[in-house]
Length: 169
Image (cartoon, rainbow, N blue to C red; front, side, top):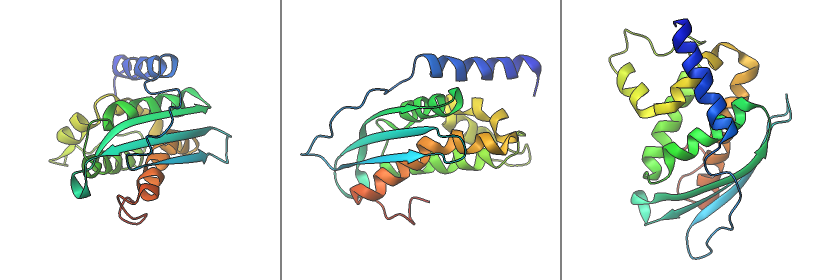
């Protein structure tokens, strides 16, 4: 990765950390399905409480809102902000696909998706600003920070009953 690209990625993370999307918990609408999750990264103490409301029914349920509050490093807070931008307005199945791609990115050890992978460009397109976390994936201790919000999202889907715990893995 070029130095200019690294700087751009760092700026994306800093911007989301300073001006996060979705921060500030809003009560769940009791008329809508949804869930709340509180997650803590035991290795560093980063934490998030996330509330997700859904609209629609069955497999066509859409993530209508994600609000959250948390504290922690810029990586965890920026990752939650990016997650919020990526999943609001998407079907639950699409949100789960994006989450799976992000988890795959965190397993690339800072190299990003392989150029041999015919889907690599499509995966990066779907991640949008989340590709900024490519460099984070080379630091195992920071991967948990980046995945904190994604774990909360998975848990809210399980709590809402929209997907089982194993199906959202």
